[in-house]
Structure formats: structure tokens, C-alpha cells
Length: 441
Image (tube, rainbow, N blue to C red):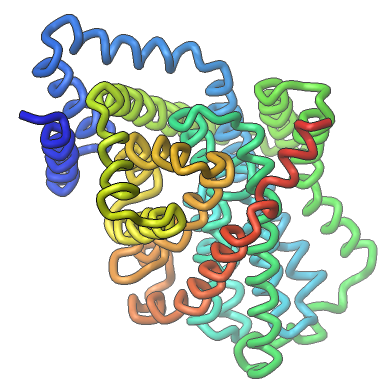
């Protein structure tokens, strides 16, 4: 049996196991170990899994993962994130679409606190969405706002997905996070521009708050501003030393976790329940990601041993004679297709052993490609009929928001995100300028 056929059999077997509902790490790790045993015997099979585990345990930047997840859960469980929305409510409610714009701002800050899109979706659907509906905002527009805003969680640092990509692609986490800053903020600005234009054309979509809700003493407004900016201060305390080179990435993540813990403690919100929930959720998510990384490393090792990447490169560049940019676009389209039934981590660990080395062989920058992958995942999350975020929103939204509303609400935001993806592809410096500037200094 040829190596190309073995690689195809491995990939198809893995997809079949995933379609039966098996856990991602179980399906990928099982196929990797079984293939290694059949190809190289007992010694080779055991060495593959053991080597992947040792590589994972020795990867020092992985310590950032539990730190940032803990920081996000502390800020969420202690309700410090709620103060953000109150601040946006008071300061931006007088504008047409002001609360929707504030919701995008809330999502950007939640992303900077947590690094997971699920956290932004949960906070947006429980805090922002009911308030927007109660104040007469169009249900389809605001549903799209919450979904689009929450997707920023996997792009704006500290993105947990980019940590996973860094491990698999063997790229610096710090560079990937910095590469996501400008595209993430650009995408948020594009969302805001869309909201402003829509509400100017049709003011009924996002009416301004009544003056009775906005006429509060300036002292109260300033108090809400201070409370709402606390997460921003925590993020600055964490990132400024890292950007200036005073601390390593791991040290900065520890500073962020400690700053969030002390902030909750000083505000009297660090109860036993908050602490237990934060630690339990942090442990669960961290272990899940570690199992996925372990399985991906083992699967990638077998693929490298088979030479599957070189075979695919030969197929595209020599037999089909495709341009490298055409190959790159086909990769992105495949991500969107897979995103209709898989989440971002599953997509990454399934195709990373194939795509990441191929991207490098084609001459593209792997840090830049990490941002392209992440933006494409955001689009795939919200692409009907089976986008991951669509069903997540359906589970969290009020009963009056139907699945049809959710589908129609996201269409304009998907077009905005496709525009952002094209901009980053055409102008790579949007992603590469900041990491080059910081690490160059």
C-alpha cells in the first residue's frame, strides 16, 4: 500500500469517527496511534504518543493557557464584565444604534479578557441582548451584532485558538497575538460602521435612548466609567510590560490572572462560589485543549513520517499546476465548508498537519496565515446552515428570536468579515506590522 493511500485512509477514518459523534481528541489520537502501530510496530506506536506528550509538557508558553482562561472566568463570574455594559449604556445610549455600538465595544473588551468566543456569546446574549430588545432595537440586527461581536474572541489577544495554532505550527504565541490586534480592531470598526450606516438609513432599527434614561448626575456617569474601565486597566497592566519587553508572555499572563483576582477581591466579589467556578472551568477547558494538542501532535508526526504533505504539494503545484494563491484560497474555502459542522479547534487539528507545512512550502508567512485561518473560522462559525455560532445563539437567545431570525441576522456581518479577510490577504502588513515592530525593537 502506498504512503499516499495510507494518508488518505487515515484522514477518511478520522472524519468518519468525528461524524459518529466521537470526541475530537479521541478520534484524532486513536487514528494516530493505531496508524503508528500498524506502520512501525510496538516501538514506533508507543514512541509517537510518548514523544507528543513530552513535547507538550516541555512547551513553556502553554502555561499562558490556564492563566488567561482563569482571568476571563474571574472577570465574568464576579460580574465585573457587567459593569462594562452599564458604562456603554449610559455613555453611548443617546446615539442612534448607540447600544449596538456599545455591544461591539463590550465584545472587544470581553475578548481581551477571555480569549474564547463562547464567553462573549454568553455575556452578550444574557446581558446585552435583553436590554437591546427591551429598548426597541430590531431583533434581527442585534442578534447579528452579538454573534459577530462574540466571534472576535478567537482573534483579539489573548486568543486561546491562536495558542493552539502556535503549538501546532511551531510559531511564537506573542507574535500571533500581536498579529491579531490590528485585524481584530479593524473588524470591530467595520461592524460599527455598518451599524452606524444602517441606523442612519433606518433609525427604527436602533433608536436612541429616551432622555429620562440618560439624564443622570455626572458623578454617577464618572463612577460607571471608572467601573467599566477596570477590565481595560487589567489588560493594560498585563500587556504593557510584555510589549515593552519587561516580562515574558508567561509572566504577563500570571500578572493578568493575579490582577483580575485582586480586582474581584477589592470589589468584594471574590466569593467562594466565584473562586470555585473559575478554577473548575479553567481546569476543564485547559485539560480539553491539552488533550486536543496532544492528539494533533501525534497525528502530525505520523503524517510527517508518511510524507503526505510533500505528496499534496506535488499534486497541487506540479500535477495540477495551480498558483500558490489559488491553493491558499482553496484552503480557506475548505475551512468554511468544514466550519458548517466542526468548531475551530477540530478544524485546526484535522487539517493543520496538511495545511501548515504546505503553506510554508508555498512561501507564505505562517504568522500571517494564522490570522487568515482565524478570520476564516469566524466566517465559518456563522455560515448557514450549520454554523457553530448559529446554534449556540439559538440555545442562548430569548424564545421570540427564531432560527430564521438568526440566519438572516448574520448575513450582512458575514459579508463584512469576508471584506476584512480580503483586506488582510491583499495587505499582509495589517497582520505583520505590529509583531515586526515590537519584536524588531
